[in-house]
Length: 108
Image 1: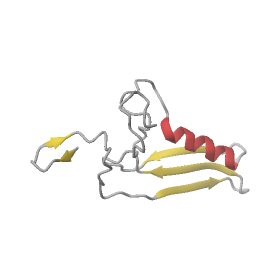
Image 2: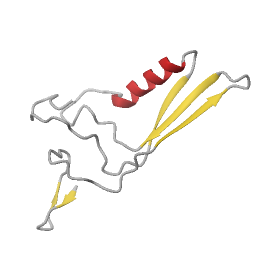
Image 3: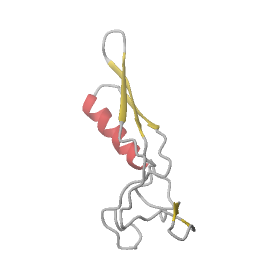
Image 4: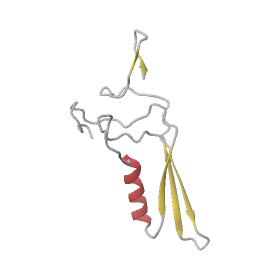
């Protein structure tokens, strides 16, 4: 939500003007856990952004961007490593629409 100049509150789901929201924590925290012999066991990644890339019109279950991140981390490290996404404190921080056509799936 955001406060408009007339002091009214409006829903802030779409941000075509890219009005800045603050504060924003751009930090991606990563912890890698290895076995005693140095073999990668797990990777924990924490990021403060709601996993809502598909938008509010999506009514299907989705693992969204954390699933893609987990797959890439596991593929790049290899072996039997397991990657986990830890939701940071995003407040009202969502992805930024680079395109917006007001149609289902547009802007993704």
